Image 1 (cartoon, rainbow, N blue to C red):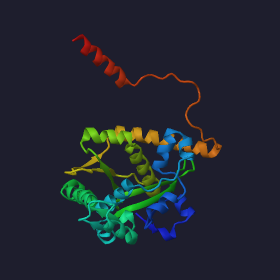
Image 2 (cartoon, rainbow, N blue to C red):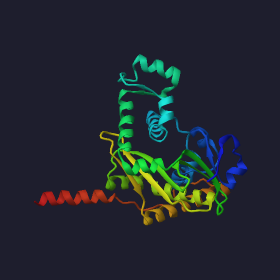
Image 3 (cartoon, helix red, strand yellow):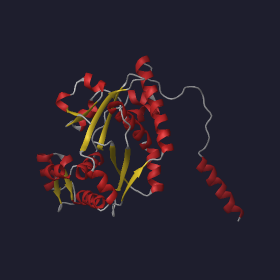
Image 4 (cartoon, helix red, strand yellow):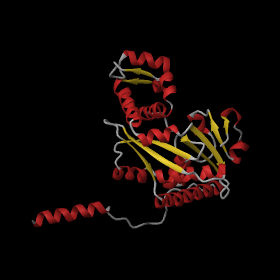
Length: 287
């Protein structure tokens, strides 16, 4: 698998298909093309993509980046991050002084540092997770390629990628149990991500992506971790949604029509859980 440094990336190489090393996260997000997060907005409506505001970095996003760095690139985390183990509050003078030097995204107070360390330890204790990560020499690897059907430039950012065609995508979650994480897969459309990334990989290399794992780690103690692979049915559903969203994006780009929700009057009903609650109330009154 060939890669190029970010300094050599050109629009022509991006459309031809390439993996790019050393590309900062902000540079990746600022590059042309459509990503999975962009397709999530298109899935709601093309208008939501067209008029989406640039997201300002939140503390949750900064902690998320710190977690990714700590788990995927521990050496860089140790070099770049400042852990204020004795500082409990970000209003403290020690925190503010450190931020002036290193930036807020690189400074963690006690509770934040403890959570990151807990997740590191949990993943290190998982044989499956540790093995999958050890087999993936490429971290935070950007990928670009033109979709031959729509002519749209696709972009993806692999958390990890091995030379043998296996990827691990790290997900911070409240509950990593199978039944609960399955809800996260549906709600956050991780199945669409798996399908899109697999397609991007195959377009660039000419070979199918052999494995796409999700490494789910809980953000609260004891920070349990689980390694998941989607079944074939879920991947098929993801692929269909990915292609439908991509077609909607391509159509909007071509026509200039960034429409919102469907305009005709539609019939709407109470959610199913409301009817179930009504049934329970009636049953309670009878008995």
